[in-house]
Length: 265
Length: 268
Image (tube, rainbow over the protein chains, first blue to last red):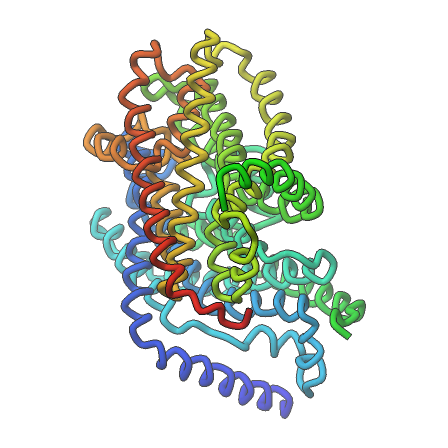
C-alpha cells in the first residue's frame, strides 16, 4: 500500500512537471487544436469518398463509421499526448546511453520512463472526438446506449493499456536494433489502419488486427458498444486480452533491461 | 562549386549513399513496413468492390492499382525534410556547407542512391502483382512506358523538392516538422495514395488536379495501370506536373538562399 501511495505521488509530480512545461507553450493549444481539426478532416475525406459510392460498407453505415473515426481520434490523442512523448524519449536514452541515469533512480524504471512527458494540449483531440460522436448520433437520430457508454469507458482503458503495451514492446526492440528513430513512424502508420471498422478486413489482415495488433479492440468494439451492439463476451475477452498484453510487455521489458549494456561507457 | 565539380563528384556521392543505404538496411525495412498502407487500403476497397465494381474499378483493378501504388511510393520516397531539420537543429549542416559541393546536390545524391535498394523491395511486389492480375493492366506500348518513366522522374522531383523546401523552413522556425506533417496529411488524401483520384466526386477531383500531390503518386500509378487511353490524354497532367516541379524548384532555391543567411550553426 505504501509503495502504491509513493508511486501515485511520483506520478502526480511527473504530470505536474509536464503541465508546467505545457503552460509555457500556451500558443501550442491553438496550433494543436487546429492541427487536430485538420487531421480529422483528412481522416474524414476517405470516409466521404467511400460513402459517396455506397450506403453501407461491410455492414457499417456512415454514422456508425463516424463513431469509429471518433474513437480513432480519441485514442490518437491518448497515444500522442500520453504515450508517444515519453517513450520516444526512451529510444533516445538507449542510443545515447543516458538510460543509466534512469536505472539508477530508486523507482521502477518502466514507470519512470513512461511518465516523463505528457503533452497536455493533445487533449484537443478529445474535443474533436466528442464532436464526431455528437454528429454521428445526431445523424442516427438516437441517443447512445446507456450501458454501452459504460462498456465503452471500460474499453477506453483497455485500449489505452494495449497501446501502451505495444509501445513498450516496440521500445524493447530498440535495445537490440539501435537505430530505430523511425519506430514512432512505423507505429503510427500501423495505427492508421484503425480508422476503419474491423469487418472490412478479411482473412490474414483481420486475424492480425484482432489478435496480434488488436486494433479492433481500440476503435471497432468501443463504437459497437456505444451502439449497444457489442456482445458481452467480446468485452470480457478484450479486457483479458489487454491484461495479457500488459503482462507480456512487462516481462519483455524486464528481460530487455537485464540484457542492457550501456551504450556510451 | 562549379557544375563540373558537381558532375565529377556525383558518382562518388552516389556510391557513398548506396553504402549508407546498405548499412542502414534495418532502418529501411522499418520504413518499408511503414509504407504498407496501400495494402490496407486494398483490403478496404476490395470489401467495397465485392458487391459491385465502382466506376472502372473491380477487384482486379483495385489490386493492380494499390500494388502499383506501393511500387511508386517506394521509388519516389524522400526523407530529406527530416534529415534537413535534424541537421539544422544540431548544427551539423555546417559540415555540409564546408564541402565544395552544393548541399542540395548532396541530398539529392543520397536520396537517389537509395533507389537500388528500393527497387529490390518493389520487384517482388511487382511480381506478385503480375501473378495476381496478369499483365493486362500494364502499359500496352513502349511509348506509354516512356511516359511512365517521365512521370516518375517528375514525381521524384516534386517529392524531393517539397521535402527540401519544407526542411529548409527549419532555418526560420522550430516547427518545420509540423509543416511536414501537414504536407503528409494532405499528400495522403489528395495524392491517390489511399483513394484513386478517379473515385473522388467531380468537384474535389477538379481541385486535386491542380494540387501537386496527385503528381507525386496517383499520376504514376494511373500510367502504370493503363488509366489513360492515349498519350494525348496525359498531356494536361504532364504540364501540371512539370509546372509544380518548376514552382517547387524556385521556392526551394528561394527558401534555401534566404534561410542560409540566418543559419547560426548552433552546437556544430
